[in-house]
Image (cartoon, rainbow, N blue to C red; front, side):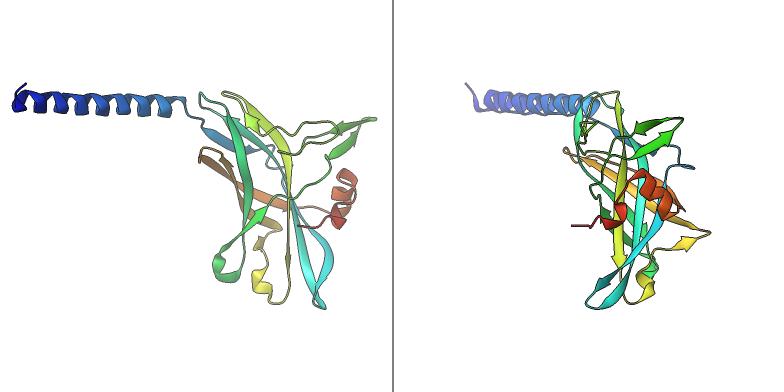
Length: 207
């Protein structure tokens, strides 16, 4: 076999491997999961509220809770598991954002028309719901999510509140590295109302 013919065969093998890799990449991109997240009834079910003051090293703290009801969908062709769901809140200090992790809560319940309606918590098993984190292709999962934060000292670290509302960004990530986000506008809600929905929420601590 001549050197020239051998070089042609090597070049052909290289081209074939590149074409094969591109086809595999195309199939992967076509079949991948595509997350999409949306607040459910954004004008109704997205709330912030003041929690009772805490204490840190003898100094009183300012505590805030954030409760939202979200839908996480998958527009792709492959089912996928969620890895994390975080909330980013805008604070006064340099107009930066604070990252919050979800806090475990009992399943929220509403008393309505003589019966109790129980709702799922995103990614958390309860007495009624399994707390699914896998989103099948063309499907979605829904659930409430609770976040809380605590500040002391300079009030520049407080959330930015405008007309009784706090802006935030909800970000969900899957195990393949995909992510989706949506803007959330939290309306102020009375703690008494929240306690009727989730008894004892004021005693829950952020571990």
